Amino acid sequence: MADLVVPPLGESITEAVVASWLKQVGDAVAADEPVVELETDKITVQVPSPVSGVLAEQKAKTGETVKVADVIGSVEAGTQAKVLPSAHQPAQPSAPAPAAAVPVAAAPEVTAWAVTQPLPILMPQAQSQPQPAGAAGTTVASAPDTLNGGSLDKTALLRLTPSQRVQAREIGTIPQKAAVQASPAAQASPAAPAAQASPAAPGPSVDDRLAHVDPRDEIVAMSPLRKRVAERLVQAQHESASLTTFNEVDMTQVMELRGKYKDSFEKTHGVKLGFMSFFVKACMAACKAFPGVNAEVIGGSIVYKKHYDFGIAVSTPRGLVVPVLRDCAALSFAGIENGILALADKARSGKLALADLSGGTFSITNGGIYGSMMSTPLLNYPQTGILGMHNIVKRAVVIGDDIKIRPMMYVALSYDHRVVDGREAVSFLVAVKDRLEAPERMLVEV
Image (cartoon, rainbow, N blue to C red; front, side, top):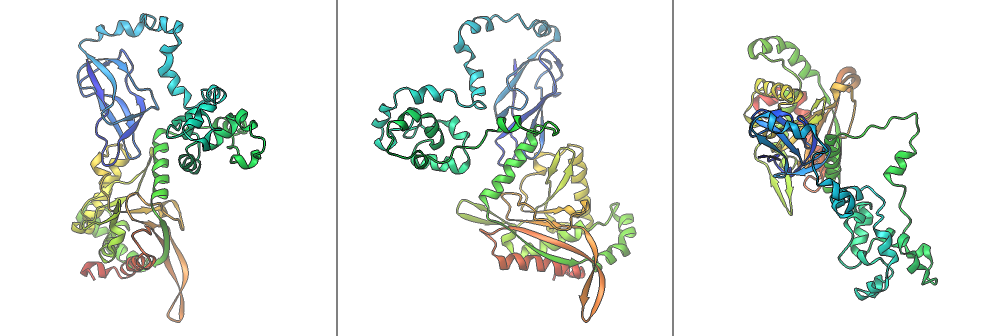
């Protein structure tokens, strides 16, 4: 029997979600044939069968979170006939029969179910003997036994908001649950007003809110990838001090240069001359001048990156990914355009490798291709800077004493204020603006 093991998933990724099983129990599989598909917040990974044979077991269900090195299934080597009979006879195993008579056998399933239920196991504990809790500390005698001291109920904690969890850890109890479920103890001390003894009751649960959705509306479960992306975006908001500053760029010179040479550029290099190569060159020069934007915070230290590996946001049918263009300082305009094109093709065809997504030092996203005029891009944690490009619109601008129509673009820089001060962030954008409005500066590197 050969195990299906969750492979290493790349930099800082320790878990994944089982997106789908490509083979079912009893199905024949060939060596190196994909059996199960895992999703992370960055890419989708297919786990191949290590041997030829049949899929004997699925230990992880679709939607379940698994960790690196977990065994999620097994393949029995050999011919298909060895396993197919058991696949067609689901009633053959005898173990489930006594499990019906012995409720304890169902404990593994109850554990998973209890996470989504309204904590029924806390009721008998709260109604049992609240007095022994005083032995651990008289200040929390009115709380349920299992919630005192350092033994906070993990399931109860997960049902609280982040601020409520902090409060629970500080006082050693679950405030909301203690107030609701330890009502007999609260009644024993009528002198303390109920409104002052406990915080406000929590709002309705997710299940309750979904049950009251307007029937005209449609409920669609978030995909595992979307959930993970949401978690990482919230993490970036919580663990960094993110701010955004804006500026506008007159794209006249870049558009004229591009229009003049785009045909000969494509004929010579086999790729179109786009705007992204100009922005990559301008941002790289600005990162050299203001290294805090090309950095990372690790604990109490700041790591200033001396290499320039830029993440380029690409939209795919499965969601947004940010593959990394390596060593931008060594690339020509043609090298940048070819590199971005190759990454975009791999992203949209689902062929990105983990190495394509790891180790970025700065990111660029272009909402302008969708018509965005202005936005505040979110940091690609743990990076400290991301540039947002937007659409190009002809606007009236004052040049000297004249009013002229020019193609203008708003640009935005989101930055981590723990590393980058406002002066540096504004100066970074001005440096980008200056080079785009006079692109010859990038050719002579001034």
